[in-house]
Length: 107
Image 1 (tube, helix red, strand yellow):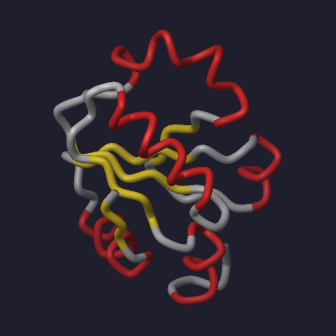
Image 2 (cartoon, helix red, strand yellow):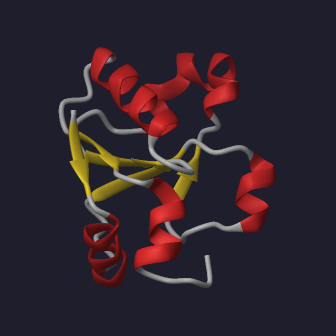
Image 3 (cartoon, rainbow, N blue to C red):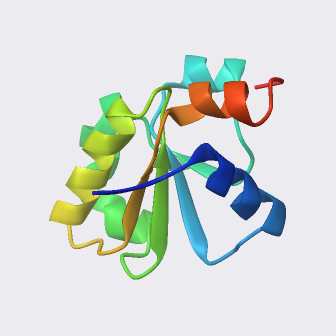
């Protein structure tokens, strides 16, 4: 699985790259604390509710970056997406925790 840094994520967010799909697999209560713009929320714990509809929610041909708190749940999601035929999936290393430490402390 490929990983990208939170610094690379910050560059993509500044560029407002519309070709990227950004997925946040954290829980709603985690999003209430800190949430980055442009991410689709698909809580990993609710996968039974959205898994059957994933091809309508995410384009398997687009580059997809996945975020969680530290990078563990996002890694699980990346593997699952790869198993579903998503060929260009990247885990955001360190998650929003690393983003808040290394990029923007307001998150």
